[in-house]
Image (tube, rainbow, N blue to C red; front, side, top):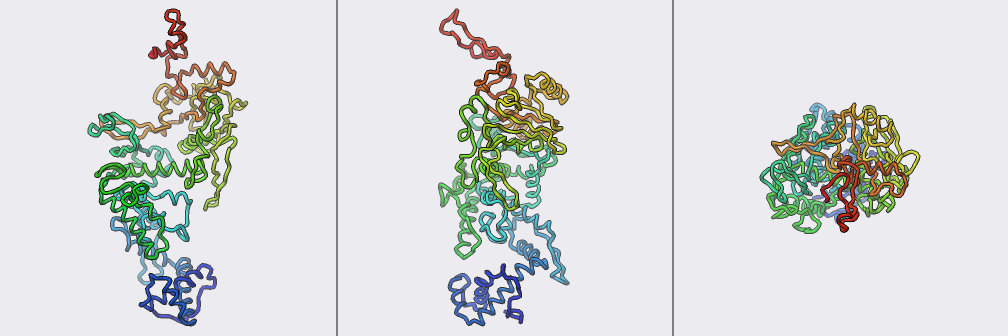
Length: 593
């Protein structure tokens, strides 16, 4: 090791960020390297041996270490491109051979300090990490950011995103399919862009993983003929191809299939074992190794993947990258959009006491005055963000949490008390607010027919239409507008009640392809009313309203105009006393007789 005169003192004049490294680990480490008989793995012995050296020797190594950290933390970072070039070179050298891309470095052989790496290459590294965990694997030898101590340069983003596994590759591992990594950085880029696209094209990019479409070969509970469909926990044979040309490539990625095996389960287990070994060797950056432990050593809590099966399915079991993505999106939506700040303060430690009908509703709300579940409001705010936004007239809980971007996240913002909710209607085209409508029980702002309206229509221009209002002028205007927009209230659009629980899918009669149906090309949306009661306003004497509700020809919050009429017929018992006051027909339906 060669020294210069400058090694005798630290060049850093502000050593606040180099002091710890220079004082504690690096001096003894550098000294140990020059004295090869001292093992760098035994840090305690190494430090004690170093402290036994003379003051001049220790001072010399301290200054040398200080200058190294000064180069690392200041010169290389702020005055040249050394760090950028080194990182890209290191990743290229140590990356998994399955990653099909080498990150580009612009070398200046005449003056190496002028070499550089364009920023787009670091963006591609992000996609490589999301799709296959390839960057952390090359840098720290673990697959997930969650397995790196959340400190220094690795301290970024919200903790819930860190702990809930934000990379697709981590979900491929935890589902027992490490062979589902996305090894093409551009495929990962395409898929992530499609998932984050909030435009009409992005809305149309969706799929199902709980609807099984019959293929004539595989049967679930006796359902499997071509054209049949039924619910299943995971539609592992689903076809994720799509006709949406804008995101067709993303669909192709999702439609790639893999097969489980004992070898793949061993790959997952080895990720766990290798992480543990790094810790045993003194790596201070690895953590949370047990997240990838399998049922081979943790039968109850581990990834359910062993020599014979994966999550209850015998090997070989087939699923697609679309299934893996569905597992990821479902879990993250549940944790980050519902648990976190909606059902409880944080998804990390959730007692489920904030939201939910059984926690927050009163008997009067549920039976007569109407209850609004915060999960439904959140769902609408996410799905129809360009058309509307729901909020509380008054919240039951208010808690603000400051995140790293210094913006305030208002947790509990949709936990409304009995004052009701507020609907903000937007102009789809310029996102300006057009209407602010309050829904408050028995208030001057809201009539009962609007408060309990089966649904309402919002146009892209920002109009709010009530086609079932008992106010003649409001109803006439709405129906005229509906006629202009060519909305058929008695056909497919009346199925919004099912669509909002499980997206409508149309099926090709000649295949099992599944494609999502969304009304993104039309000039309106139909919103199922989030306010619900078993017996709307039965504790209030409004004869006009009760006649209105009873003649909607529906059951509870079901489809309007489902029945033939709004007349119920009872037996008088004149011919048969045993039938006194029994129903002969309900709303014109005689099938109960």
